[in-house]
Image (spheres, rainbow over the protein chains, first blue to last red):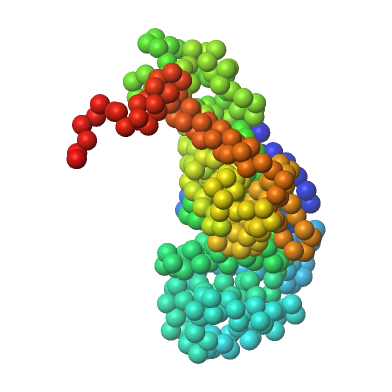
Length: 306
Length: 129
């Protein structure tokens, strides 16, 4: 286990949890979780199905109660200050479901807006146009993708201080997915906000994310700034001669080789590593940072093998 | 100008933007006193974090390639010699070529020889003409 994968994150926290635990029967959903999302961050939360992502977001909103531990949002308690917390949050839930209501979409949005004094109707109008939301459709008749679009309008239009997006592009076609990412990029520039996005599709948020949290079996196995990842998590490729039995002088997250050609995913100290690899007898061919998606894969693979 | 980036690339996105602006200046697409696209426009077009665009523009400003006029935008600075700019661009091309050559196990001389041969159109490969 590399303890530096849990660097304390700089700046005031928009969201922080301490030792958050939640079980469903014998199933552990959240295992002593310490999440830390700095203000202004675009925090990408990844992890396999059942890792606890949805439970975590629901706990922050007090839609589900932790067994122990605490969650604070902008210094407020998720359980004691529920309404105050929720008024500052835009939420896209995990399930694209509006079948509980007989409202038309326009009526639903009007109803929703009443709860948020900061609701920006001009912005809501632009979002509905851009996402091609039909205000006259009945909510109960919408497809999964259409529900998603309505939920995105609901989440964004009051320009909340915190956006919690649980698989926000789930059910959307590729064209609309892309448009949603454009809307989020624009939103980041027009509204000061902190974003926590849970997703499997890391490549979609490659350009947006500046923090990464990797969740597995209810535990954060890594929580890092993007710049730290770029600087320190590196893939080195090179060749070694027959009989070479040394190892790179850094923690190795993964190692593959075919014949003489090797590739190591390394957690380095952030200083140039070429010479130090060469000193162990490796003919270095390349040293590269990983994409967010590559980093996710490497970090998840690490936990399985150690 | 149209900024083109590759999100799957290992090169940080803000540096790719810096490269693109440099390229546009070197080939004359961007000229002195032309404005760069706004941070918001670039962020939306590329589906990237506006902070990344700001970081790129700050870097360009630090290098004296552009300057910011408060409330009006970011503009290409006229002072810089375009010969310098071309040199800088050639340098970044050279770095890419060298890294690739090294990855394939070629040394500098072998790379230069291959470049010369290719540029002279005299490669020994049988063309399909």
